[in-house]
Amino acid sequence: MKKITLVLSMVLFTIAGAFAQIEKPVTWAYSAKKTSKTEAVIYLKATIDDRWHIYSQNVKDGGPVKTTFTFAPSKDFSLVGKTIEPKAIVKYESTFKMNVSYFEKAVIFQQKIKLNKGTTVVKGKVEFMVCNDKQCLPPEEVEFSVPVK
Image (spheres, rainbow, N blue to C red):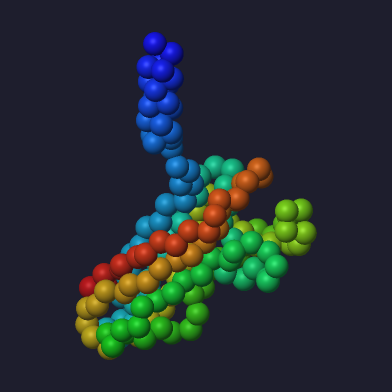
């Protein structure tokens, strides 16, 4: 009888662990807007849960993983300049023993492109790290695909 109870308990805890929620405090949305026949802007928006933040693209070495955008090469378009971001919050974080730049609630990154074709799809990935005042989650990579019409 003890063996059956032990086996049932183990099965119950295994099932409960499988349904444990994985924290995903950041969601991404993407869009594009043509600014002329030959240019467009790609918008990459991060919506961040309360009490969490993601880091700027401009974090110095030795700190948290900075947000990085990588765009897949294409004959249909070329990048114009670097991905831009709004002004970030800058604060000292004792975890990293340095001032870091980060965003809370939401942030929209923008990448200008020159179109070599009327319509295209811009593909790539974003790597980012999210933290709150108690913990940091491992860096994450998310792929994106943005149609430009």
